[in-house]
Image (cartoon, rainbow, N blue to C red; front, side, top):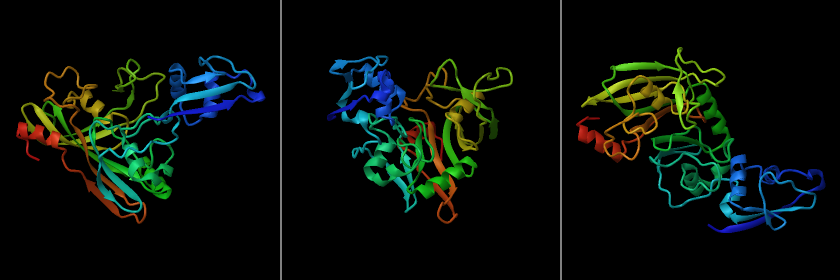
Length: 317
């Protein structure tokens, strides 16, 4: 990764400002965490001396960044080596089939293996679409290990229209999941979700007994139909009525049917079928086209790794 050197002089009106605060003034697109990391990694210096984030700057001091160019990127960097299947595309929308193991987006120029980096490489104009510079045109996200369909807007008008549909719960998103246990033929899970205060990576389902005092709570509704079963496992077609972080995974675990190979919510699973990710695939999108309002239905094929598991279990799809 090429290096870059960049410097900024402290004006008189900002005398005595902290190093981290001044760095954010100079690089407003970077998060506080990114700035703190760069200072910790000794990428910033003041008057040729390594600095700490709490140091105070005087008028006329020079803050210098010397490090990888990607640190200062204002958008996702293109990565032509990434391979993602285009499922559907026209002048206003793009639908991609995200592979398992690929994040939907990153948080700085240092992230180079995300769906956003693929978009930057193949659809550079989309970097100007959307409200978050790191999520070019992206309407909704998938977890890193979840494969399947991601809807992307190619114009600002399409982005606003699709985001409104998402807020009104008019975009239908279906998933396939293989879970432990024999589920009901169909089910409806209506449990609010909140962040797990003991583990920042996780969400948790809220019941009347445990509550969620002084926490933000999101309403979440998941519906499912069982479309196959074998050897104490159930294959589900899932309809997300809402879209909360980790919703499907948390809801299914909460009713005693965790997703196979889910390392975060699956508990102590003795058999993961040697899978490198959890068995969850975004298989279907239904929405109104932002240009003319027609109903668009798009489906994704089964990924080969999940099909292999079903073949071994003799579950036909």
